[in-house]
Amino acid sequence: MKRLLILAVAIAFPYLAWAHGGEDHGDATAPLPTTSNAVRMSSTSDQFELVGVLDGKVLTIYLDQFGTNFPVTKAQIELESAGWKGNANEVAPAVYVVSSEALAQPGKHPIAITVQAGDTTDLMDAILEVGLVKAGAIGLEHTQYPREWGLWSGAAALFLAGTGLVFIRRRKQRRQH
Image 1: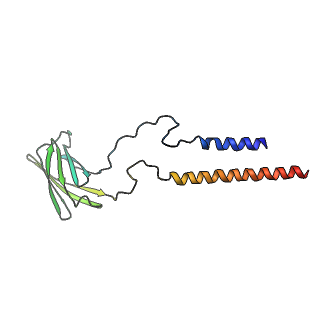
Image 2 (image 1 turned 90 degrees about the vertical axis):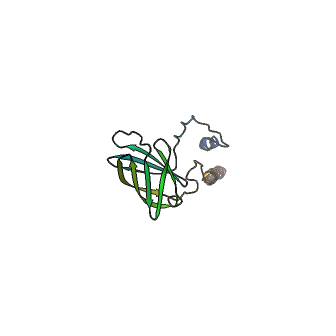
Image 3 (image 1 turned 180 degrees about the vertical axis):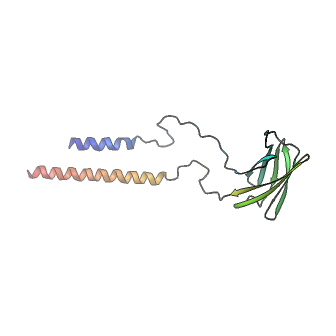
């Protein structure tokens, strides 16, 4: 009997020591790297390298020379996709922006990009794939917390009920002998 009680306490003890209420109870974890959930596209040719980042309705384009990775300034960039046309404006050296309601819609957007920088003109293509934002996809929130507590509490209750039944049976057997 004492062994059974000690076993029940030994099994239940770690369950009681779980972190709760924002407490950690463990080693400090390394912070997660900061990343952007913005949609990206890229394209390269033998003249230019282009990366586009869609944040909301604004597409930011970074333009470099292909061989040297040198920033390309004062370029004219024209974009075209499924009935939409736009010209990107330079907001910083080699950084261009264009607003587009059409590109912000979910789906795959093939984009034809014309880049003219000085005497060099190039036609590039890219695909901007915008997905649907799922609830809870961005945060690190633990959404199953109440369900897990219910599961573990049920398992603990079942274990304790089984232990109690074993205890009652053994007691009855001892009285009969």
